[in-house]
Length: 456
Image (cartoon, rainbow, N blue to C red; front, top):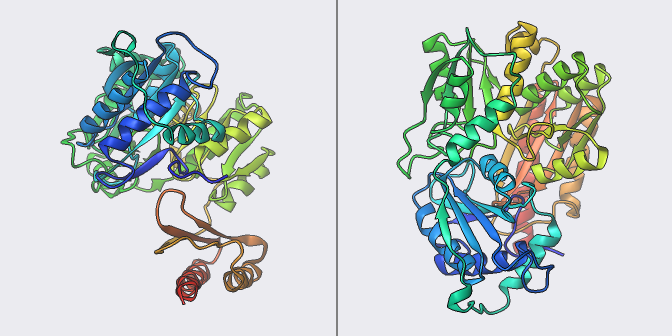
Protein backbone atom coordinates (compact mmCIF):
# COMPACT_ATOMS: atom_id res chain seq x y z
CA UNK A 1 0.00 0.00 0.00
CA UNK A 2 1.44 3.36 -1.02
CA UNK A 3 1.98 6.16 1.49
CA UNK A 4 0.68 9.69 1.06
CA UNK A 5 3.32 11.62 3.00
CA UNK A 6 6.29 9.37 3.77
CA UNK A 7 8.89 9.00 1.05
CA UNK A 8 12.22 7.21 0.85
CA UNK A 9 13.55 8.94 3.96
CA UNK A 10 10.74 10.40 6.05
CA UNK A 11 8.66 13.38 5.00
CA UNK A 12 10.17 16.19 2.97
CA UNK A 13 9.08 19.20 0.92
CA UNK A 14 9.15 22.94 0.36
CA UNK A 15 8.44 24.96 3.49
CA UNK A 16 5.06 26.67 3.31
CA UNK A 17 3.71 24.16 0.82
CA UNK A 18 1.80 21.05 1.89
CA UNK A 19 2.75 19.07 3.81
CA UNK A 20 5.50 21.26 5.33
CA UNK A 21 3.13 23.76 6.96
CA UNK A 22 2.69 24.57 10.67
CA UNK A 23 -0.86 23.23 10.88
CA UNK A 24 0.05 19.91 9.27
CA UNK A 25 3.17 19.57 11.40
CA UNK A 26 1.16 20.05 14.59
CA UNK A 27 -1.19 17.26 13.48
CA UNK A 28 1.84 15.17 12.52
CA UNK A 29 3.28 15.61 16.00
CA UNK A 30 -0.02 14.52 17.54
CA UNK A 31 -0.34 11.48 15.25
CA UNK A 32 3.30 10.46 15.63
CA UNK A 33 3.10 10.89 19.38
CA UNK A 34 0.17 8.51 19.63
CA UNK A 35 1.70 5.87 17.36
CA UNK A 36 5.37 6.03 18.32
CA UNK A 37 4.78 6.01 22.05
CA UNK A 38 2.11 3.33 22.16
CA UNK A 39 -0.97 5.46 22.77
CA UNK A 40 -4.34 4.81 21.18
CA UNK A 41 -4.56 1.47 19.40
CA UNK A 42 -0.96 0.53 20.20
CA UNK A 43 0.53 -1.11 23.33
CA UNK A 44 0.81 1.41 26.17
CA UNK A 45 4.27 2.63 27.15
CA UNK A 46 3.48 4.77 30.20
CA UNK A 47 1.44 7.78 31.18
CA UNK A 48 3.98 10.28 29.87
CA UNK A 49 6.20 8.78 27.18
CA UNK A 50 9.04 10.89 25.79
CA UNK A 51 10.06 11.91 22.28
CA UNK A 52 13.36 13.62 21.52
CA UNK A 53 13.49 16.33 18.82
CA UNK A 54 16.60 17.56 17.02
CA UNK A 55 17.00 19.71 13.93
CA UNK A 56 19.55 20.97 11.45
CA UNK A 57 20.38 24.66 10.94
CA UNK A 58 17.58 25.74 8.56
CA UNK A 59 15.74 28.89 9.56
CA UNK A 60 12.41 27.08 9.25
CA UNK A 61 13.47 24.67 11.97
CA UNK A 62 12.37 27.07 14.70
CA UNK A 63 8.82 27.26 13.36
CA UNK A 64 8.47 23.56 12.66
CA UNK A 65 9.98 22.58 16.01
CA UNK A 66 7.34 24.63 17.83
CA UNK A 67 4.51 23.13 15.79
CA UNK A 68 5.78 19.58 16.27
CA UNK A 69 6.24 20.13 19.99
CA UNK A 70 2.66 21.45 20.29
CA UNK A 71 1.22 18.35 18.62
CA UNK A 72 3.24 15.99 20.78
CA UNK A 73 2.26 17.85 23.95
CA UNK A 74 -1.40 17.70 22.94
CA UNK A 75 -1.05 13.90 22.76
CA UNK A 76 0.33 13.81 26.30
CA UNK A 77 3.94 13.26 25.23
CA UNK A 78 6.92 14.84 26.97
CA UNK A 79 9.50 16.40 24.65
CA UNK A 80 13.28 16.66 24.89
CA UNK A 81 14.82 19.39 22.67
CA UNK A 82 18.44 19.21 21.55
CA UNK A 83 18.60 22.20 19.21
CA UNK A 84 20.79 21.83 16.10
CA UNK A 85 22.15 18.30 16.10
CA UNK A 86 23.17 15.77 13.40
CA UNK A 87 20.58 13.17 12.49
CA UNK A 88 22.72 10.28 13.81
CA UNK A 89 23.17 12.20 17.07
CA UNK A 90 19.41 12.17 17.53
CA UNK A 91 19.39 8.41 16.87
CA UNK A 92 22.08 7.95 19.54
CA UNK A 93 20.53 10.30 22.10
CA UNK A 94 17.09 8.73 21.66
CA UNK A 95 18.58 5.41 22.66
CA UNK A 96 20.89 6.80 25.37
CA UNK A 97 18.19 8.87 27.06
CA UNK A 98 15.66 6.02 26.88
CA UNK A 99 13.16 8.08 24.87
CA UNK A 100 10.39 6.17 23.12
CA UNK A 101 11.15 7.85 19.78
CA UNK A 102 13.26 10.51 18.11
CA UNK A 103 12.40 13.01 15.39
CA UNK A 104 14.82 15.07 13.30
CA UNK A 105 13.65 18.22 11.53
CA UNK A 106 15.80 18.24 8.41
CA UNK A 107 15.80 18.01 4.64
CA UNK A 108 19.31 16.52 4.63
CA UNK A 109 21.22 17.64 1.52
CA UNK A 110 18.37 19.76 0.07
CA UNK A 111 18.53 23.60 -0.10
CA UNK A 112 17.39 25.69 2.85
CA UNK A 113 13.93 26.33 1.37
CA UNK A 114 13.08 22.67 1.99
CA UNK A 115 12.59 20.88 5.27
CA UNK A 116 11.23 17.61 6.54
CA UNK A 117 11.09 14.99 9.26
CA UNK A 118 13.02 11.80 9.93
CA UNK A 119 11.80 9.40 12.60
CA UNK A 120 13.63 6.96 14.86
CA UNK A 121 12.40 4.21 17.12
CA UNK A 122 13.46 3.99 20.74
CA UNK A 123 16.30 1.71 19.55
CA UNK A 124 17.67 4.48 17.31
CA UNK A 125 16.64 2.83 14.04
CA UNK A 126 14.53 4.06 11.12
CA UNK A 127 10.85 3.19 11.24
CA UNK A 128 9.45 0.22 9.32
CA UNK A 129 6.72 0.76 6.73
CA UNK A 130 4.02 -0.49 9.10
CA UNK A 131 4.67 2.32 11.59
CA UNK A 132 4.71 4.96 8.85
CA UNK A 133 1.36 3.63 7.61
CA UNK A 134 0.03 3.80 11.17
CA UNK A 135 1.08 7.45 11.52
CA UNK A 136 -0.63 8.31 8.24
CA UNK A 137 -3.78 6.53 9.38
CA UNK A 138 -3.73 8.48 12.65
CA UNK A 139 -3.46 11.72 10.65
CA UNK A 140 -6.91 11.01 9.23
CA UNK A 141 -8.46 11.16 12.70
CA UNK A 142 -9.35 14.39 14.55
CA UNK A 143 -7.05 15.69 17.26
CA UNK A 144 -8.36 15.18 20.77
CA UNK A 145 -6.22 17.28 23.08
CA UNK A 146 -5.45 15.75 26.44
CA UNK A 147 -6.83 17.46 29.57
CA UNK A 148 -4.47 20.15 30.87
CA UNK A 149 -3.19 17.98 33.71
CA UNK A 150 -2.16 15.31 31.19
CA UNK A 151 -0.40 17.49 28.59
CA UNK A 152 3.22 16.78 27.79
CA UNK A 153 6.07 18.96 29.04
CA UNK A 154 9.21 20.08 27.22
CA UNK A 155 12.79 20.67 28.33
CA UNK A 156 16.13 21.29 26.64
CA UNK A 157 19.10 18.93 26.75
CA UNK A 158 21.91 21.43 27.21
CA UNK A 159 24.79 18.95 27.01
CA UNK A 160 23.57 17.12 23.88
CA UNK A 161 26.54 18.16 21.72
CA UNK A 162 29.09 17.13 24.35
CA UNK A 163 27.43 13.76 24.84
CA UNK A 164 27.56 13.09 21.12
CA UNK A 165 31.19 14.19 20.75
CA UNK A 166 32.20 11.66 23.38
CA UNK A 167 30.12 8.95 21.73
CA UNK A 168 31.80 9.53 18.36
CA UNK A 169 35.25 9.42 19.95
CA UNK A 170 34.36 6.16 21.68
CA UNK A 171 33.96 4.45 18.29
CA UNK A 172 37.67 5.01 17.54
CA UNK A 173 40.17 2.65 19.25
CA UNK A 174 41.63 4.03 22.48
CA UNK A 175 45.10 2.90 21.45
CA UNK A 176 45.05 5.04 18.28
CA UNK A 177 45.06 8.76 17.59
CA UNK A 178 45.11 11.09 14.60
CA UNK A 179 48.33 12.95 15.44
CA UNK A 180 50.30 13.96 12.38
CA UNK A 181 47.23 14.23 10.14
CA UNK A 182 46.10 17.58 8.77
CA UNK A 183 42.40 17.36 7.98
CA UNK A 184 40.05 19.86 6.35
CA UNK A 185 36.41 19.56 7.46
CA UNK A 186 33.48 20.98 5.47
CA UNK A 187 30.40 21.01 7.71
CA UNK A 188 28.05 22.35 5.00
CA UNK A 189 26.90 25.10 7.40
CA UNK A 190 24.80 22.30 8.83
CA UNK A 191 24.26 20.31 11.98
CA UNK A 192 27.85 19.05 12.37
CA UNK A 193 29.30 22.56 12.65
CA UNK A 194 29.61 22.47 16.46
CA UNK A 195 30.38 18.77 16.78
CA UNK A 196 32.72 17.43 14.08
CA UNK A 197 35.65 19.86 14.66
CA UNK A 198 35.84 18.83 18.31
CA UNK A 199 35.76 15.11 17.53
CA UNK A 200 38.71 15.18 15.15
CA UNK A 201 40.69 17.76 17.13
CA UNK A 202 40.32 15.87 20.40
CA UNK A 203 41.54 12.71 18.67
CA UNK A 204 44.75 14.55 17.82
CA UNK A 205 44.36 15.81 14.25
CA UNK A 206 45.23 19.27 13.03
CA UNK A 207 41.80 20.47 11.97
CA UNK A 208 40.93 23.19 9.47
CA UNK A 209 37.19 23.84 9.36
CA UNK A 210 35.05 25.40 6.66
CA UNK A 211 31.28 25.57 6.25
CA UNK A 212 30.88 26.11 10.00
CA UNK A 213 29.06 29.46 10.18
CA UNK A 214 25.37 28.63 9.64
CA UNK A 215 22.95 31.54 9.31
CA UNK A 216 19.77 29.55 8.60
CA UNK A 217 19.99 30.20 4.87
CA UNK A 218 23.38 28.87 3.77
CA UNK A 219 23.04 25.16 4.63
CA UNK A 220 24.40 23.02 1.75
CA UNK A 221 24.94 26.16 -0.36
CA UNK A 222 27.93 25.44 -2.62
CA UNK A 223 29.54 23.40 0.15
CA UNK A 224 29.41 20.06 1.92
CA UNK A 225 29.20 16.57 0.49
CA UNK A 226 26.93 17.55 -2.40
CA UNK A 227 29.15 20.47 -3.52
CA UNK A 228 32.68 19.32 -2.67
CA UNK A 229 34.62 21.67 -4.96
CA UNK A 230 35.38 24.08 -2.13
CA UNK A 231 36.68 21.21 0.01
CA UNK A 232 38.88 19.96 -2.81
CA UNK A 233 40.37 23.41 -3.31
CA UNK A 234 40.97 23.89 0.41
CA UNK A 235 42.76 20.55 0.76
CA UNK A 236 45.16 21.56 -2.02
CA UNK A 237 45.61 25.12 -0.72
CA UNK A 238 46.33 23.96 2.83
CA UNK A 239 48.42 20.98 1.66
CA UNK A 240 46.28 18.79 3.89
CA UNK A 241 46.46 15.02 4.12
CA UNK A 242 42.75 14.70 3.37
CA UNK A 243 39.38 16.43 3.50
CA UNK A 244 36.07 15.32 4.96
CA UNK A 245 32.73 16.75 3.79
CA UNK A 246 29.35 16.25 5.46
CA UNK A 247 25.84 17.01 4.31
CA UNK A 248 23.45 19.32 6.13
CA UNK A 249 22.28 16.80 8.72
CA UNK A 250 25.51 14.88 9.08
CA UNK A 251 24.49 11.37 8.05
CA UNK A 252 26.51 11.39 4.82
CA UNK A 253 30.21 11.85 4.19
CA UNK A 254 32.60 12.19 1.26
CA UNK A 255 36.37 12.50 1.44
CA UNK A 256 39.12 14.14 -0.59
CA UNK A 257 42.65 12.75 -0.84
CA UNK A 258 45.82 14.83 -0.60
CA UNK A 259 45.79 15.37 -4.39
CA UNK A 260 42.27 16.82 -4.34
CA UNK A 261 40.54 13.73 -5.74
CA UNK A 262 36.99 13.19 -4.54
CA UNK A 263 36.18 9.85 -2.89
CA UNK A 264 32.53 8.81 -2.79
CA UNK A 265 30.66 6.42 -0.53
CA UNK A 266 31.53 3.36 -2.62
CA UNK A 267 35.25 4.03 -2.27
CA UNK A 268 35.00 4.73 1.46
CA UNK A 269 32.93 1.58 2.00
CA UNK A 270 35.54 -0.43 0.11
CA UNK A 271 38.36 0.93 2.31
CA UNK A 272 36.49 0.01 5.48
CA UNK A 273 35.50 -3.46 4.24
CA UNK A 274 38.92 -4.37 2.84
CA UNK A 275 40.71 -3.24 6.00
CA UNK A 276 38.29 -5.07 8.26
CA UNK A 277 38.74 -8.26 6.28
CA UNK A 278 42.53 -7.92 6.43
CA UNK A 279 42.38 -7.51 10.20
CA UNK A 280 39.79 -10.31 10.59
CA UNK A 281 37.09 -7.91 11.80
CA UNK A 282 34.61 -8.23 8.93
CA UNK A 283 31.48 -10.12 9.93
CA UNK A 284 29.82 -11.57 6.84
CA UNK A 285 29.71 -9.38 3.76
CA UNK A 286 28.75 -5.92 2.52
CA UNK A 287 25.38 -4.52 1.43
CA UNK A 288 25.24 -1.83 -1.24
CA UNK A 289 22.34 -0.52 -3.28
CA UNK A 290 21.17 -0.53 -6.87
CA UNK A 291 23.38 2.56 -7.32
CA UNK A 292 26.61 0.95 -6.05
CA UNK A 293 29.32 1.01 -8.69
CA UNK A 294 29.80 -2.33 -10.44
CA UNK A 295 33.59 -2.02 -10.11
CA UNK A 296 33.25 -1.84 -6.32
CA UNK A 297 31.20 -5.02 -6.30
CA UNK A 298 33.78 -6.77 -8.45
CA UNK A 299 36.66 -5.53 -6.25
CA UNK A 300 34.99 -6.88 -3.12
CA UNK A 301 34.30 -10.20 -4.78
CA UNK A 302 37.99 -10.38 -5.75
CA UNK A 303 38.71 -10.24 -2.00
CA UNK A 304 36.14 -13.00 -1.40
CA UNK A 305 33.85 -10.55 0.38
CA UNK A 306 30.16 -11.35 -0.25
CA UNK A 307 28.13 -8.46 -1.68
CA UNK A 308 24.38 -7.89 -1.98
CA UNK A 309 22.34 -5.00 -3.37
CA UNK A 310 19.35 -3.41 -1.63
CA UNK A 311 16.87 -0.86 -2.90
CA UNK A 312 18.09 2.74 -2.72
CA UNK A 313 17.78 4.19 0.79
CA UNK A 314 19.65 3.48 4.00
CA UNK A 315 16.55 1.91 5.54
CA UNK A 316 16.60 -0.80 2.86
CA UNK A 317 20.33 -1.32 3.40
CA UNK A 318 19.69 -1.73 7.13
CA UNK A 319 16.89 -4.24 6.54
CA UNK A 320 19.09 -6.41 4.34
CA UNK A 321 22.02 -6.19 6.78
CA UNK A 322 19.76 -7.37 9.59
CA UNK A 323 18.41 -10.21 7.45
CA UNK A 324 21.95 -11.39 6.69
CA UNK A 325 23.40 -10.73 10.14
CA UNK A 326 26.05 -8.47 8.57
CA UNK A 327 27.36 -5.16 9.93
CA UNK A 328 28.62 -3.07 7.00
CA UNK A 329 26.76 -1.43 4.14
CA UNK A 330 26.09 1.85 2.45
CA UNK A 331 25.34 4.00 -0.56
CA UNK A 332 27.59 5.81 -3.03
CA UNK A 333 26.10 9.07 -1.77
CA UNK A 334 28.21 8.58 1.36
CA UNK A 335 25.53 7.16 3.65
CA UNK A 336 27.43 4.32 5.35
CA UNK A 337 26.23 1.93 8.05
CA UNK A 338 28.69 0.43 10.54
CA UNK A 339 26.28 -1.39 12.82
CA UNK A 340 28.99 -2.39 15.27
CA UNK A 341 29.49 1.33 15.91
CA UNK A 342 26.04 2.92 15.52
CA UNK A 343 22.44 2.00 14.72
CA UNK A 344 22.20 4.50 11.87
CA UNK A 345 24.31 6.04 9.12
CA UNK A 346 26.74 8.56 10.61
CA UNK A 347 29.10 10.76 8.60
CA UNK A 348 31.52 11.41 11.47
CA UNK A 349 31.73 7.78 12.58
CA UNK A 350 32.09 6.54 8.99
CA UNK A 351 34.99 8.94 8.46
CA UNK A 352 36.61 7.66 11.65
CA UNK A 353 36.37 4.08 10.35
CA UNK A 354 38.23 5.14 7.20
CA UNK A 355 40.83 6.96 9.31
CA UNK A 356 41.30 3.85 11.42
CA UNK A 357 42.30 2.03 8.26
CA UNK A 358 44.69 4.87 7.38
CA UNK A 359 46.35 4.90 10.80
CA UNK A 360 46.59 1.14 11.28
CA UNK A 361 47.88 0.48 7.76
CA UNK A 362 50.20 3.46 7.58
CA UNK A 363 48.87 4.18 4.10
CA UNK A 364 47.01 7.12 2.59
CA UNK A 365 43.42 6.79 1.37
CA UNK A 366 44.61 6.83 -2.24
CA UNK A 367 47.01 3.94 -1.51
CA UNK A 368 44.20 1.98 0.13
CA UNK A 369 42.22 2.36 -3.11
CA UNK A 370 44.92 1.13 -5.48
CA UNK A 371 42.94 -2.05 -6.28
CA UNK A 372 39.69 -0.19 -7.03
CA UNK A 373 39.04 1.89 -10.13
CA UNK A 374 35.40 2.88 -10.39
CA UNK A 375 33.62 2.53 -13.71
CA UNK A 376 32.39 5.77 -15.29
CA UNK A 377 28.86 6.29 -14.00
CA UNK A 378 26.49 8.86 -15.47
CA UNK A 379 23.38 9.94 -13.59
CA UNK A 380 20.77 12.12 -15.26
CA UNK A 381 17.80 13.39 -13.24
CA UNK A 382 14.88 13.91 -15.61
CA UNK A 383 12.31 16.33 -14.19
CA UNK A 384 8.76 15.10 -14.84
CA UNK A 385 5.38 16.73 -14.26
CA UNK A 386 3.74 13.51 -13.10
CA UNK A 387 4.75 10.00 -12.08
CA UNK A 388 5.68 7.58 -14.87
CA UNK A 389 5.74 3.84 -14.23
CA UNK A 390 9.22 3.16 -15.57
CA UNK A 391 8.90 -0.57 -14.97
CA UNK A 392 5.93 -1.16 -17.26
CA UNK A 393 6.32 1.46 -20.02
CA UNK A 394 6.98 -0.65 -23.11
CA UNK A 395 8.86 1.98 -25.13
CA UNK A 396 11.16 2.74 -22.22
CA UNK A 397 11.86 -0.93 -21.59
CA UNK A 398 12.93 -1.38 -25.21
CA UNK A 399 15.44 1.48 -24.97
CA UNK A 400 16.83 0.18 -21.67
CA UNK A 401 17.16 -3.41 -22.92
CA UNK A 402 19.01 -2.20 -26.03
CA UNK A 403 21.46 -0.30 -23.84
CA UNK A 404 21.99 -3.33 -21.60
CA UNK A 405 22.81 -5.49 -24.62
CA UNK A 406 25.38 -2.96 -25.79
CA UNK A 407 27.06 -2.77 -22.37
CA UNK A 408 27.17 -6.51 -21.84
CA UNK A 409 28.59 -7.88 -18.58
CA UNK A 410 30.78 -4.82 -17.99
CA UNK A 411 28.00 -2.32 -17.44
CA UNK A 412 24.58 -1.66 -15.92
CA UNK A 413 21.48 0.45 -16.47
CA UNK A 414 19.22 1.62 -13.66
CA UNK A 415 15.99 3.51 -14.23
CA UNK A 416 13.91 4.53 -11.21
CA UNK A 417 11.51 7.19 -10.02
CA UNK A 418 12.79 9.36 -7.17
CA UNK A 419 11.12 8.81 -3.82
CA UNK A 420 11.61 12.42 -2.70
CA UNK A 421 11.43 14.59 -5.85
CA UNK A 422 9.40 14.75 -9.13
CA UNK A 423 12.22 13.17 -11.11
CA UNK A 424 13.13 9.98 -12.92
CA UNK A 425 16.73 8.98 -12.28
CA UNK A 426 18.67 7.49 -15.20
CA UNK A 427 21.94 5.78 -14.27
CA UNK A 428 24.27 4.09 -16.73
CA UNK A 429 27.74 2.75 -15.95
CA UNK A 430 30.38 0.84 -17.86
CA UNK A 431 34.04 0.84 -18.85
CA UNK A 432 33.68 3.19 -21.86
CA UNK A 433 32.74 6.71 -20.68
CA UNK A 434 31.71 7.97 -24.12
CA UNK A 435 29.39 5.01 -24.61
CA UNK A 436 27.96 5.40 -21.11
CA UNK A 437 27.24 9.10 -21.66
CA UNK A 438 25.56 8.46 -25.01
CA UNK A 439 23.38 5.66 -23.67
CA UNK A 440 22.35 7.69 -20.60
CA UNK A 441 21.30 10.64 -22.73
CA UNK A 442 19.38 8.37 -25.09
CA UNK A 443 17.42 6.87 -22.16
CA UNK A 444 16.80 10.33 -20.64
CA UNK A 445 15.37 11.49 -23.97
CA UNK A 446 13.15 8.38 -24.00
CA UNK A 447 11.83 9.28 -20.54
CA UNK A 448 10.81 12.75 -21.74
CA UNK A 449 9.15 11.23 -24.81
CA UNK A 450 7.27 8.77 -22.60
CA UNK A 451 6.04 11.63 -20.43
CA UNK A 452 4.78 13.55 -23.47
CA UNK A 453 3.10 10.46 -24.85
CA UNK A 454 1.31 9.83 -21.55
CA UNK A 455 -0.20 13.32 -21.65
CA UNK A 456 -1.68 12.95 -25.14
